[in-house]
Image (cartoon, rainbow, N blue to C red; front, side, top):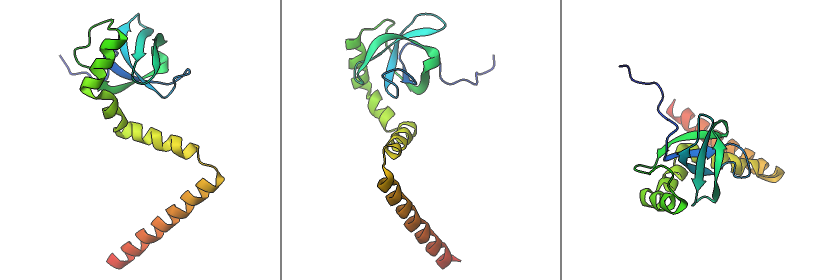
Length: 135
């Protein structure tokens, strides 16, 4: 039997990123699988209410809760999340840090964008001078 190309599966305990709705951008955990289109998600530590959610509005993350029973309640999920420090792992991942940086960049006003431009210019000059010294 050949090994699968897929690494992330829809399964109970999988941490997911919500793409739409009022909690878009938050992470939650799959608590129960309803059918081929929807799952019950719950995010007790990220203020995502327990609800049925379609797969097409979820993004599967590489993080997963181990030994989470099917249909687990919010209390069990919260305890498991804190025990395994899954939310902390997510927040320190490259994916989450890039999303946070992008969100912070989007919130900048005109002066903030100007300051970023000046900082990039300074960095570019330092790199050019360092390369010129080595050459």
